Length: 274
Image (cartoon, rainbow, N blue to C red; front, top):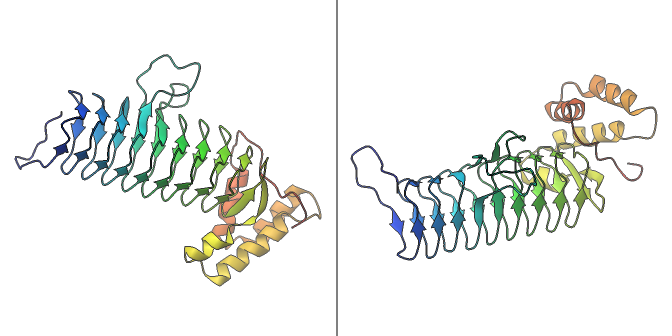
């Protein structure tokens, strides 16, 4: 167990049945419950609680005030055939709730070497964050939601139960992935998708209202969405028209910037006329 500077008393609770390897760094207020196994390269932030039977392996760093429930495995090797035991990382932010049997893997050398998970997330039972994913803040993965490797999941995204996001897919801020969806294409910010394979169903209106977006902003987003995904003209023409009409809207321009950015996956589009 790593030492701590400052000269003050360190309050760390480790259950007698837990195994904490020499070299692990535990900050003040950490609680390690029964039968947890903490590897020698783990760093666990202040006031984080590992309930019981939690495994933290590899070069894994947890921030402060995380709550990790039984049988979660953090920092396991990437599920990638090219992985040869390289020292890559998993970095998790603060104030996350990680429920039973959730798994988060370290990165791969070819993918940048780091899997990153933000703060204030809620990762429900048996959810999975694959290698080299970049997950933002306030993200919710509902039961058994799965992120393939290299996914980019922006802030405030909700991934429904049993949904799967294909590797290299991007999901923009405030988007909603419906339960059982198979997401193989990029999802615009504020979008709502569902189906197998998932198609763009509209905007995530419920989420926007819950997060305090005002009526004017929501109405602007709805109007821009209708223009962007209408039947008339080419997509490029509609994209240009949307920019010209709604350039003063930061939310609409966020969607435009998302669409124009370099991407590995095609864009998730509506299945029918909007």
